[in-house]
Length: 142
Length: 285
Image (cartoon, rainbow over all chains, first blue to last red):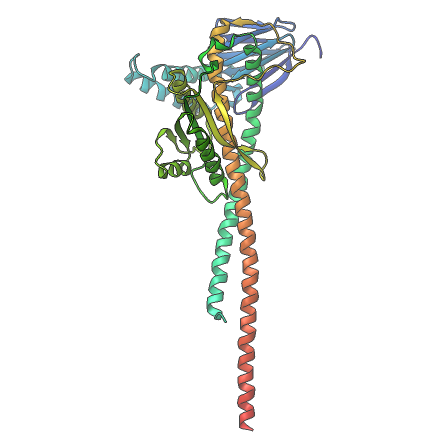
């Protein structure tokens, strides 16, 4: 294996989103963002809703991520996620609908309700997708 | 001798049945292809998940998390996964048979509770006066969040010590032709040990080991249940495709036989008619 590259694999229960050789990965960990360069020490972290960035040469690429895990080995990063999308894959209308649904549901719930946090998480995911599209979709050149 | 009109009627009815089974076979084939793709697509995730879990579990004491604790099996839950619809050969019956024999085996040693997925499953066990912990219809298209919800209930009951072990009866998908009904233990979890030549990697954990384990274990169950549902759905379509294929072939065979019979009857009728004319003519001479 080449020693100056990282093999980045992103998988969700529905599909393999990415399997590529990259130079750097920056992922949103539960305790803050972390960056991974080749030769990083083995490391296991939870991933929270946000944005994962990877670099190939001097090109930055972005993936919107949902809850999951990242397993880092010296030259390999495996990311297991509930859901992950590239900018061009996000269905804006669906995310917008999900946001509205979550917001109106949230308005009727109080913090003690059974599915309060679930709805909050759904809202979080929808917002993340929308922000992500707004920030990343137009400037595809990187 | 059957009369001509009756045979003609039979032929046309067999032909229309054949059209239906042929159409169902084609629909099942298309659905099978999709379901099969889903099974294949879910595989990398599932195998990565068990890798991560295995490497995590070797470094944690077994009793550390409730989902890893083994208890004496006094109360056992069985989740039976089959389909909502029939006309799929032995698919549903096979699952029921296996589930039934499992229940027979266990019923003397422990208390049993049942959860079902699929209308056919529900009806079968309801007729036998079972009550269910959970009853769900088969969603057809399996959604991960749906699997998560279903598993959540199972996990909760296990953690609350309402159940001491959970088994699942479902159909393993091997290929469109072969499917196996199996009963597998879902809980307590037994992470597969590392292979001899694998060296466990020392990780840095973020957040702590325990927090990670608490998060990853339920998720592993979701993945398992999700995979079982996917395989069940694929098996259902495969089984239906095969059943409908042989139904179509039977119909074709039957049409051929009936046509032969029809022609023979027609011939006989003509011969009789000729004989009558000939003998009539002879009588005149």
